[in-house]
Image (cartoon, rainbow over all chains, first blue to last red):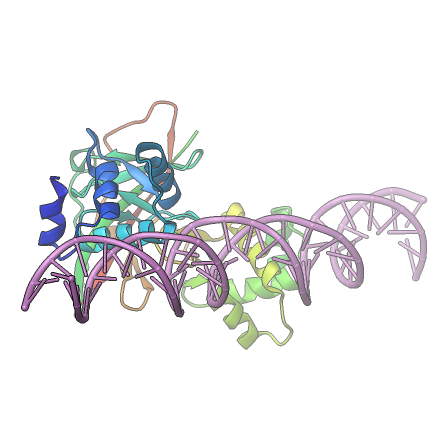
Length: 132
Length: 132
DNA sequence: TTTCAGTTTATAATGGTTCTAAATAGCTGT
DNA sequence: ACAGCTATTTAGAACCATTATAAACTGAAA
């Protein structure tokens, strides 16, 4: 399996569950956005044994910490994640709660002119809310 | 009271609770950010009768709908609101969960080059996450 | 194979937010 | 001022995403 190395290199044991979640998350042509519930559903559809919700939470957080996933700042009752870990931004369709990637070239460079003493910028996230 | 008109004009009855919440939110020199819990605490400190949590939720949502408050897109277990309703962005201090206003002049114009058919841009929010 | 820390799991607990239904309070017309 | 009506408030229950728990299991190393 191609994900065994990736996991080992991150200090994560390549368990059956993690490998299956890797398949669902990363064996895709395109990157995508998801909530935990949507991922749970996707896992049920693609894999034939069930993975506990707690494991899905644990794994997603572990992957996020390792940089294999990004969390997206949106106000919603659910947390959104992105398998696209490149630097980019999002449209957020208020009507259906769906996210759309905005390439960096679609936004242009963001120049933060103000500094906060003793603090580093970890990330800059632009969210463009869409309505009808 | 100076908020009676404001409320009436928005189709909101100027109840005692709403007027008191107006005082806490808008009788300040500077605008500020808050979560519902923080607002609840502030109300307890400034006002001597208690307002039910449900009323605080209702009122904050009503004010947001009328444009007297803005909701800020941050990933947190709690929802953040802002009494500064001008167009501006935020630093988000990951360590303590505090927000800091970024004036528009601190960021420069954001130019979204891509369009989505049939959709209008409702808002553009930039969140700059800070770490040590 | 034995051992042990890392992992998974079902389930309970947590906590922010929303719902409910009854009591109360503004508002309008008389 | 009063009656009548609807909006609003309220306490408490319900909801639901997420996290904690503690026992069972598993991968990896000796």
